[in-house]
Length: 390
Image 1 (cartoon, helix red, strand yellow):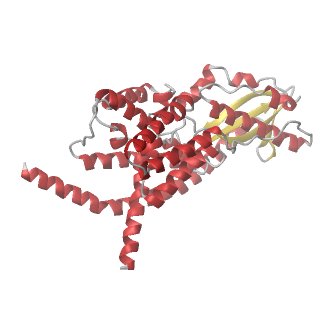
Image 2 (spheres, helix red, strand yellow; image 1 turned 120 degrees about the vertical axis):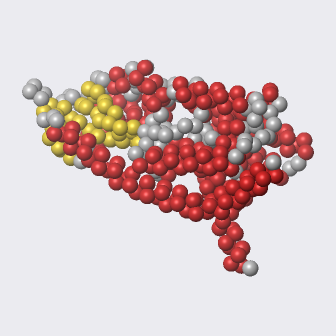
Image 3 (cartoon, helix red, strand yellow; image 1 turned 120 degrees about the horizontal axis):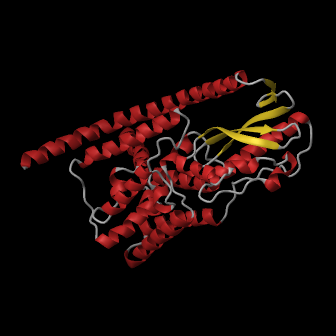
């Protein structure tokens, strides 16, 4: 028994010594994947357009604008893109010679498959057919419940195509103002309040602190979870790394507040107090009177968690698709929309919460693992700084 403890202590010591060099390798790998993915994405887009033009009788009129010549008529083709829930959505809009929309085609997208599937199930794409360019803003298809970000992105991309075509043909496009999602409202205010409650919880003690904790837990689960389904997922982290977050104030506040507090105080307020799935696990734990436990080979499990998150980020950056390798369970838990595998994983994690406190957070969550990397850099930087000052 004593020898096992010694062996375990040695393994933990070795892992801790390896943390810093492995973290450096992880950051370098992420940077390489970012630049490689950007280069590959440009090549894929260029090859796609070239292939399309070679397979059709297409004449290039201007950048992103083509004309498809038929025996009895011609169609305008316009490429455009917008930002959806997880990243870019690239759209090809086909117009008749009379300037009405004949159809739209999704060239590529980064949305979660289950969300995008809802668009097909609700015949969203058929709703574009026959809309005249001048009437698009008032007649565009309504957003699909559960896939609002995706539908808004497609509508916005078509609006951009309309503007491009109008500018090319020199006609005025009425009602063409582009709405911005960079608006401060109730969601953003509540998010800031939750971060404020997290700070108060750390300052205050006793019954007041407990009241603040459970107020935050219930508010987070109800609003960020079931009503809005807004969580800091791996897809959102990848979206941020790819630079597509800054048109949504809610997620901008979420990531910047999380990072700012983490860097200044070293505390992860998001995972410990705001994450709706983490808080949902806390509520389930009350039912089973769960205890805080550690698995055998705890440190190895933590490294598996970090490795899975790192691999998922690398693949997302390489393929320029933030949701490609997202295995977070938030949508399954609150929106009941996910693949069968993720739904099963979610059910298993909630079941485990009856016996282990926050099992998902401790051993599988890629968000926590990603933020752990920042914490490690903060700790190491402070250690080096203090060493230099002494």
